[in-house]
Image 1 (tube, rainbow, N blue to C red):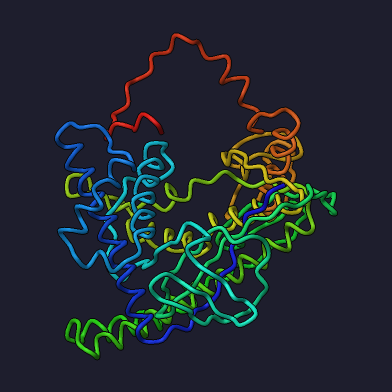
Image 2 (tube, rainbow, N blue to C red; image 1 turned 30 degrees about the horizontal axis):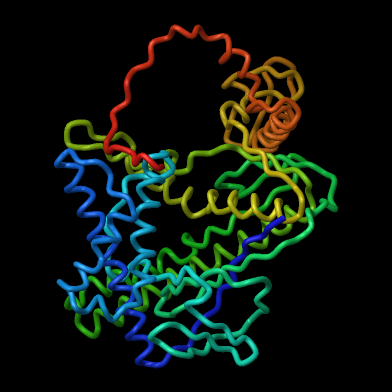
Length: 413
């Protein structure tokens, strides 16, 4: 099997190299936003989607109009146009929302897509980048495989290099033979079908008061003054601490689960829909907005999407499989007799079947049902919910309402 893996290192650039990287990131952001602006104007005029090749042909014209674009490597600018095209493809295929303009200071990065454009001297802990020269990095681990591309990014006032490698491995055979179902939540981060659970970290909640204090201090400073920038750096440090703690927690949890189980069944949760704001608008104001806002904050603090993403590729690396099953009624279905009723779940934690009297923790019951659906999905190739037969029984003559198309999809997508 072919494994793609990224190795991330902190860079140690000098002042001139930092200035150059900021210029490259700014040029990349400018090209991305300009391409997005042209696409939106073209769509408003009734035109078709402009592909990467046609958009890249405009780069020389942009460089003549904006001389400072010539200071950036053209590979990074071309890659920015490819990123813009990929963003639209994700939107057309309903994997993401409509692309938005990139803002200065948020997610600054640029990529060299070909290994010929950079050099790595790991023995001396240095990397060579176009127009920047050799740059030292914190050599914390060995780079395994053949380097394919490198992405330079900034986070928390520091610069990082993420080197993606490729290598051939034999198809792994899982050492573990057990299967487990996982029910994610807020009171318990992950409840397993064997009755055990993983306590939540809640990294944002732990630092929320300190973050609010720094934000209040920043709001009292003169905008863009030196003191304002100092206060902003303090806020960035808190956000970096929160993100690093959550990332460490998720990596340790997913590594442990992927090592000890050959099959893992999880709920197919739509986190974006679950954490959508309930504020509404002036015509249709939302209800219980404050309570829903707190729930959204707690959901996003858990990192459920990243948990599933890490679990999927780590299981694949070890020869295991991840199965996502529908989440409806998992905590209202009795695992003993199969009776489904809202009254079965009497409280947030208590489950008692009104038909057979079976009792257990509600999250454990949910995990047991998720595992059972995972077995059905693995055996029958269905979604595991038991509703596939009902879906097939629907008449084919049911009228389908037309959907509104916001932009024409490219012919090659």
